[in-house]
Image (cartoon, rainbow, N blue to C red):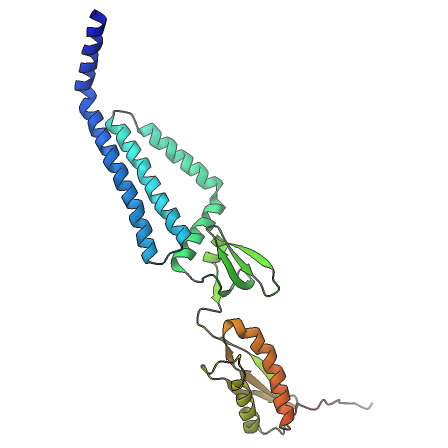
Length: 269
C-alpha cells in the first residue's frame, strides 16, 4: 500500500512539473501537423495555378510538408525538454554528406525544377541542346529525353540543359526553310522570282505568313546564286525542304529557266 502511495505521489509530482509542457507539446504537435498538411496543399494549388508540371506539383508539395514536419518534431522535442542541438547537428551533417555525394544528381534535380517551372520548352517541341537536336519526348526531374531525326533516343542531363544554350525551333510557331538555287547568268530575275513565289505559295507545306521570299545572293562564278526562303510549321520543315526543291526544279524547267552551264577551262602549254 505504501508503495502505491509513493508511486502516486511521484506521478502527481511529475505531472505538476511536466504536465503543462506535455499538454502544450501535444497541442503544438496536433495543430502543427494540421497546418503543415494545409501548407503542402497550398503549395500544390499555387503551382497548379501557374500550370507547373503535375509531377513537380506533388513532389514540391510533399517536400514542403515533410520539411515542416521535421521542424515541428524538433520544436515538440524542445518543449519536452529534449536537447535538440545534437539532433540538429546530426541532420545538418547528414544533409552535407548526402549533398556532396549527390552533387551531380542535385544539379540535375535543380535543373529539372527550373525547366518545369520556367518552361523554356515543352513535350513535343523541337529543340537543340548540348549539341543534340530532336523532339522532346519526356521532361523528367533529372533528365530530358529527346528523339532525333534519325530516331535515336538521347537522354540529356537537366543540369547541362538548364545551364547551357537551348534553341527552341517550335516556340515561335514557324521555321524558315533555307534553299539555295543557281541560275544561268542570262536569267530574267523578275520572272524567276514570280515563278518561285507562285510555286511556294501553291505548296501545302508552306505558310502564307511570314511570306516567302526570293532574293539574289551573289552574281559570280558564271551563275546567279539565289536564296529561296519560305516558312513552314516545325512539323512540316523537312517535307517543305525536300518537296520545294523538286517543285522549283520542275517549275523552272517548265518556264525555260535554266541553271548555269558547266564550263571547263583548258590551258594549252
